[in-house]
Amino acid sequence: MASSMEKLLADVKQFTEGTVVKGKVLEVRSNDVVVDIGYKSEGVIPLAEFENPAALKAGDEIEVLLEQLEDDEGMVVLSHQRAEQQKNWDRIVTLCNEGGTIEGKVKAKVKGGLLVQAGVEAFLPASQIDVVPPRNLDEFVGKTFLFKIVKINTDRRNIVLSRRELIEQERDEKRRALLDNMQVGQIRTGIVKNITDFGAFVDLDGLDGLLHVTDMSWGRIAHPSELVKVGDQIEVMVLEVDREKERVSLGLKQKNRNPWDDIALKYPIGSRVRGKVVSVMPYGAFIQIEPGVEGMVHVSELSWTKRVARASDLLKVGDEVEAMVLDIKRDEQKIGLGIRQLEANPWTQVPKKYPVGTKITGKIRNLTNFGAFVEVEEGIDGMVHVSDISWTRKVTNPAEVLKKGQTVEAVVLEVDSANQRLALGIKQTEPDPWRDVEKRYHIGDVVKGKVVKLTTFGAFVELPDKIEGLVHISQISEERIEKIKSVLKVGDEVTARVIKIDTQERRIGLSIKAAAYSMEQLEAEKAQFEANLKPGEAIVDLEHAFEQAREERNQ
View (spheres, rainbow, N blue to C red):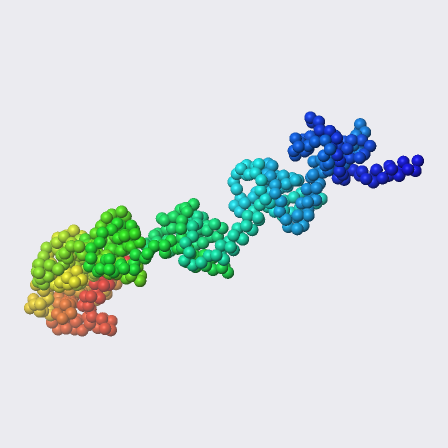
């Protein structure tokens, strides 16, 4: 009795539910396997639990998990699959503690990532699949990879894997190896990974290098995308290696000889070149003479005679043009070109065709605040300064007396062919009426004229010979006048008396109220007339008067 009890206690100690025990295969059936673990009854395990059932045979020793000592039929309940999972779990826990890696097969796509079979089921987050999270997770299902165990929860038997960390670790090792072997001057092959405004990043098999836009071509390019695009495989030269910061500078143009080295020999100043317009800016156009060599035609060098405001008025990208080399700056990689130099400069003939004193007829092409431009012939303009428009009027703006498109006569005053300037005068076509003004006008003369301008301090009156005189507001009436516009308006015919003549300053002072005065009264009025002026100001200061009149009109 005692021996039977001892045997039973020993069996219970040996066979504890939830433990992994060894067993022997007694029989392999079509759907299950009979296994003896040395207990009083055998267990039956489904054949599907075995990874390679075809290789299983009677007599094989296997490990099983004792799930239950006896079921309802008195049979022991065993599981080979759970025994393997338990072994794998223990192995994974050990690996995790050591920071190890495991191999696993992607089983299915689940929410947020992938389910991996690595002896036990584990979760691979989408963010940990690759360096760049893939868009299509289905392409990984069924494939086997190496993973790093990043997190394990023993209570929940939950495992989190990462493939990305292994890839990054591999790339870091490869990058360090590449940096150690990288030397300035080496030619390397890489793939264009990214393009920015300042250059392109090239993947040198795990190490990114910067190909700056200035190192792409000996010529001028506006954007890196003109030469390379993402995915291109290119050969580049290593220009600089910073191992501490893990930075590599690359060059594309350095693979070829610098075409600017012998540029002065190939294109001496004064030689003619042909090229294609590759860029047009408001100030000029860039012409490619050969790959990597461009010259610039400034807008001022496009034509001798045409008024070119912008280079695009004459040239466009793609035009084939001929030009002359004007200047070379090899160190700055600049060539100055000229197109107008291919033709004779018509201004060289202007002094002979239009010597000083020549009278010409032309149309006013343009008006500015300081004068008017008159077309002498096609491409040749002369400028009439505002001071040379009239002998008698102080013209503050040419638009007061001239208009665009008007045909005028003028006299050539000065020729400067070097600077392409031709000075003209309109008033010089007539005699200067101020030369003999003292013969025609005397102090005390009674004159008639028309009011042509009003200012706050007086009125301008045009006399028969177009000479203008100024009537101060104090010389209009015996009564005090606050506003001159209340008694006079432009166009009024008035009678006045000359009270002052200054031929040097081209000024005549008039008085309407003194028209009937005696000479004695006139002298007294003249004294009072000048006493009304501000210190340093002349009543017949036509320049001041015209300036004030213009200001008042603009208000």
